[in-house]
Image (cartoon, rainbow, N blue to C red):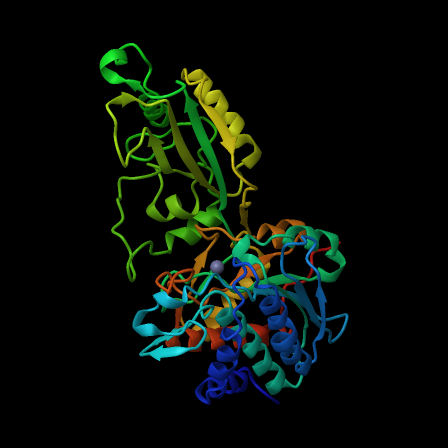
Length: 466
Ligand SMILES: [Zn+2]
């Protein structure tokens, strides 16, 4: 008779014996910089030479699939089946990283090797996402080695283009829904709310970018000759922006605000401590949606930002009336907002306020908002398991304030989605000096081992009646 504690002890000795470091170091060495030209060989090699041998050894059947987009990296689908009556989990990771910026790391550190300094382990991909999926797979192996079987089925999807916005992921999953029939989705990416506070989130806010342009004159005109006679597009644009959001960050465009927060979401957010931590700026408590708490403002409200705003030439201002003005708008939005209505609502707003001349240009595909209710049986099950391993309350974030392609799993594959992040906000992902924290990593290994253990121990939520 083996126990949960044996599996936890197994993963502790796996870490303490240096095996985690060796596995992660091997993976960090692949220069899988998906946003650089010429990365194709490294992307394929990460799957063929690292993941497939490792997973095959653990009893997975592996198959790689070409990306439906000719310019993007392959997908790996690996399955480990133990039986039809058992729960099936879909899990996910991405093996690509952003560029290494090799010359810009402190103390000449090599981004393609692990450098340990105190609690920090530096290297490109340590936090995003190689470290995170290495933790989850090692935890899976701890359960397998301890119990002899998992007690559940696993479908693993590894993509190699997440840092480029996951090209082809949605189409691939939509075309292969049969490959991803599961009871629950559990994966890891992104930061904990605090390095010492185990965290779970069940979705993310969406993102929508757009541009507002006002072209009034064919060129600049001398302000002495024409000032007072010609419309200044910069001033008009400033007034347009002022009509969209007030002095304290409250959105004024009708239909853009989210004011409906489900009670379960409100209750979960009420327990979260917002802000603080390394390199964190001081919060402006009077900014944002006035009737919401700070937590609700970042996790449960729609927010509108101006990312950039230009008229004339700020680098070399001329005594002239500029010909045009441009403002780059940005929204983060929550579940319940119809993203397709955001621009029609803005058009109506601008027309109503006398800004019909301002052109609106929508940028690229939006990232969609998702959120599993914190009261969902699978969310509750995961919270219980993680709390049990942690021995204290964990942080439950209904949805991340930032964004990830969770709509593919939540909406296209229709799975309850659970994310257990193993990094923290100060990890410098996407920048030089990316790192994970040793203490957080050890704790994450235990949390995931406990979670996988419990998944195979019965007592999981029953599938909803078909
Ligand atoms: Zn990333």
